[in-house]
Image 1: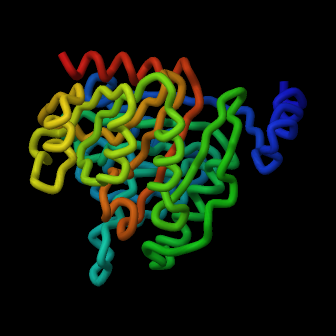
Image 2: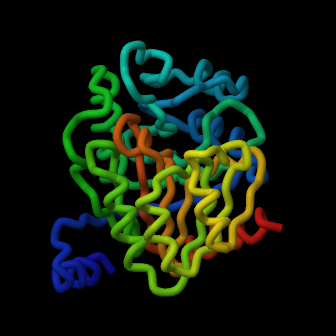
Length: 286
């Protein structure tokens, strides 16, 4: 399988992609008990735990961290005192081989979120490089991601960090190429350039109701009769394109998310995974 995928990559001009044998696990909060999933993952560490958290207040996760005897390093948003943006990440690297990321702040609150747990040495290296920058107080700047395209088994995952890798441009490119549909469920959406791309698409949207301010794209979409729902405590940052590609991570399509905050982004090319997110959108929009 590995040699076949590498041949395909070369034929498609994607020689920079790398291949890992690993796994991808998707969880939705609170129904999949993300708090327990993260605590279990941390407890499983044999060598190291490196985490960048916007916030951490979950007693269960804190207990798992305290009881672990491995090397542990953490970066929190509260440590950044004179920085114009937020350290908005929610990720951990376990044993330099497993990554957990997504929209979930480990605070024990029952917000609607998603987490992605990926076993991949190359993705872990990306996240560890980013963590080391943050650990050295290099905020909102740093080197571009080393392995932007990683195959985990037969699933292509693109990985970017904001603002270093211009996340909004990556998202705009994929959304502009949509041919069938775009589903999104997003906490804060104020990027009108992205909204304007979506206006020419078959769009189904879900926004956090508390974020529908004058800066939100909500009035624009409602005025143009885009299918749009609102829901409280909805903290995801997700796009699903053509039922085959998922964009997720800590990044909201906002000015701060693109220009000032430290964020991370995954673009997962998988029909099977995409359909899980579409099904969740349909459930949430009821």
